[in-house]
Length: 267
Image 1 (cartoon, rainbow, N blue to C red):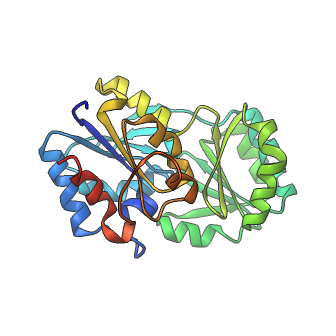
Image 2: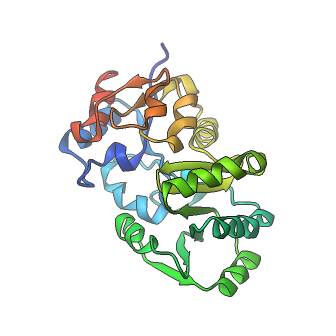
């Protein structure tokens, strides 16, 4: 077994418990790993500005993987290491598709959150990740689409509507964009080459760390590529049932310090 050099940790449902807090045990486990010379990073679907609030957990100036790998950015100086936006020609068709299925849309532009005018989910979502947001009318959205680089879109709606959208449309879209449900009511849409696994591969080249020297800890389907890539993949006990069926290592739930338990298996 190769020596462990890097640990990538998802935030929601993994590092955070159900009270949206980070336990003392998880904090101490991160510190123990860093004292052993192991890089510890966050790999999240969240915006950079949202995830940055957790930088106080880390003593090393490691970059953050945000937007499910669409952005890798330094915590300390904000330097962008890697960014891959959605192809411009796909944004308007995706927005139209989402509307056809009665779903709401979030847009992420320059680390700012925007939503369509009828979006009933954006307020609760923005409160959860602790960021401001702006609602736009259709004509404003189309102007933004033409002018701005959009790193990610998210479709919100009833689980059955999201599943219907995926059933009907995914096969024709997956060679153009990346689609993944991170929650039953939340579908993330990005560049087809964007996921946490490719982000770790890119970061590994920079740091000269092999996949076999990495650990990943996650709970949901947007963690799947990360867990497939790393040599030491841990899925949370509260994880998606499809992930729990795969041949990953198992750790405790997010309410039982699952991150600390996974790290303790190697330290």
